Length: 177
Image 1 (tube, rainbow, N blue to C red):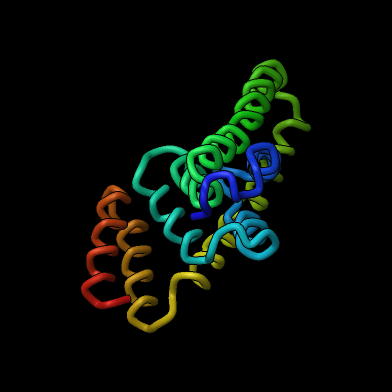
Image 2: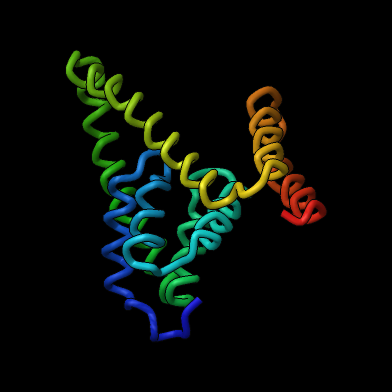
């Protein structure tokens, strides 16, 4: 975390997180967030990115907590407010407008084709995010085994992801990962 007032500033963070929010599907585009916040701007470290994503998985819904965490790590409370407002504000307005249009034209063949075309794109964005997390978080065979076990538990059972994240955190700490 930077000292208050030493970060990039409220408006810069607001605009960058608004851009990130508008190109995210399902609440996150982790690959792009990593590219910008870690690689290009150097505002956060890969560890902060991974920790924020894990923190975001503890709550239901979109990864609001992770975006707020990134903003806080960059510029304190002002950064947290700018990141949260920028990431979710424009997207919420756009989603409301899209919902109105969708209700009116939901049976139109072009709209159905557009929706179907977005599904593989969304899968690609999710896969890219998973690869970013793997690169920043898995550094040993034990870590890879723990990640695989967590994936299998979430895929094959109905266990709440909070318990899997907390269990993996405790096991990872015990193993010194």
